[in-house]
Amino acid sequence: MSPLLSLRGLGVRYSGATAAALEGVDLDLAPGERLAVIGESGSGKSTLARAIAGLLPQTATLEGTIAWPGLDHPARNGRDIGFVFQDPGSSLDPVMSVGKQVAEVAHANLDMDWRAAMRLAVELLDRVRLPEPSVLAHAYPHQLSGGQKQRVAIAAAIAARPRLLIADEATSALDTIVQAEIVALIRELVAEDGMALIFVSHDIALAASFAERIAVFRHGRMVELAPTVELVAQPRSDYSRALLAAHLGLEAHSGAGI
Image 1 (cartoon, helix red, strand yellow):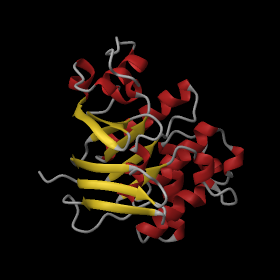
Image 2: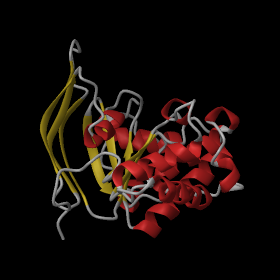
Image 3: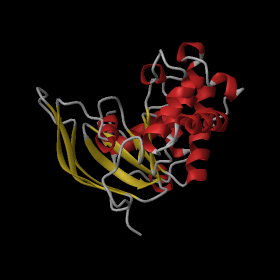
Image 4: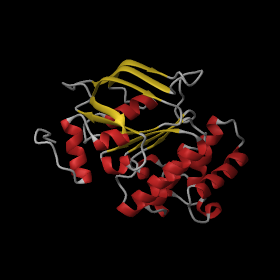
């Protein structure tokens, strides 16, 4: 089976920066695969996510290739790729009702008329387990809690039935209980719709709870890529050992230096 996504020599440089934000990434993602991308702040993991989705700023220069063997066209953000940002408060429009924001994605990408898109929006708000979705569809982001806003953002991200869902630190701004609920929701939606998932996080324990493979990033480079079970049981790099020690309570290798 052809991979859905194939990266070769992928690099990103920002104008004025002395070092590359991302360098020499080779990675294939299978259709329906759940991949976690792990690393500290500044490791390049969010840059990777934004590069794949075509969301890099104009100050960035892209190197290498991003190919989509699993599609018959270049991937379209919003249609083929759904993206969930870290802060739903900044990704949602404060002056538009949440129902309209979800419906807008379907209307723009699926050739739906506005009435059908609004019906779908209510269905999606129900699917992400928001209370009274037909009522909440008329609410504005400031009227919702952080967890509710992130559920709206997830509903918008899957509204066009994408092949790939990217969650970029989508749980880091939430408390522990809500984090677990959002992760369970993402896992369920990905399984039901057959989407591939790239889950970006600094928390290797959280990622290990559901990802099939884990890619570990440091200083813009991928230092390890392995099936989750193998990486947790026997990490090859000192840095991976340090991350595991920090989040899973394992003994860190003396040379890790995280």
